[in-house]
Image 1 (tube, each protein chain N blue to C red):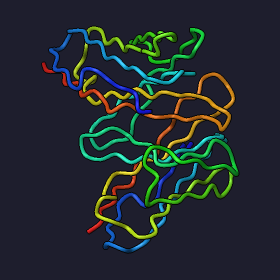
Image 2 (cartoon, each protein chain N blue to C red):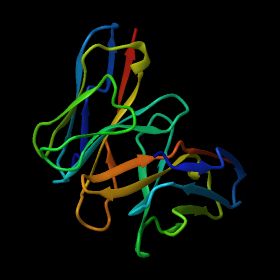
Image 3 (tube, rainbow over the protein chains, first blue to last red):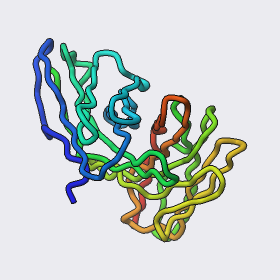
Length: 114
Length: 112
């Protein structure tokens, strides 16, 4: 099982460039999340999608947009990258609606904005 | 919204015990615990549900006080492999669905 797959793994952008981070899960999970992790810091929620067709802002949504393309895929877009968005980005998914909803994470995208 | 974790960092010798605490200001549906090794993705350890159910790693235990919105992770007889950063994740459910946020992490170092 692939679990949660993120692409790309590494990316360098110039200030002002745009890009989309892709995330796909094959576990039939309802909910998907995007987090950013800065050096020595925890995971901060950017956006989440509780179910297909819905998206909501998390703790740090400014400068980002998301699309829940279908149940499997949840993308994160940076329209005009800034150095402050240099971070490691993690996508995660959970199976909502039941009791146990452990999160599965992708391997992360290391983004540097110069 | 972000839960608070304590301590920020712990240094142990192999075989020693540790407790990591997590608290939230919101009413919680569940608390999760994850461990992250340097350069890797977080890995699930344990989940504790409102109502008392829990599921997780055999050698790790945790508690969840629903009234106080607090959870503690107990690491006993620590091993070198326990080193890493431990995150609690708190889940609250509202009309809009799940909202799953993490604490800032507790860095655990186990020395020989």
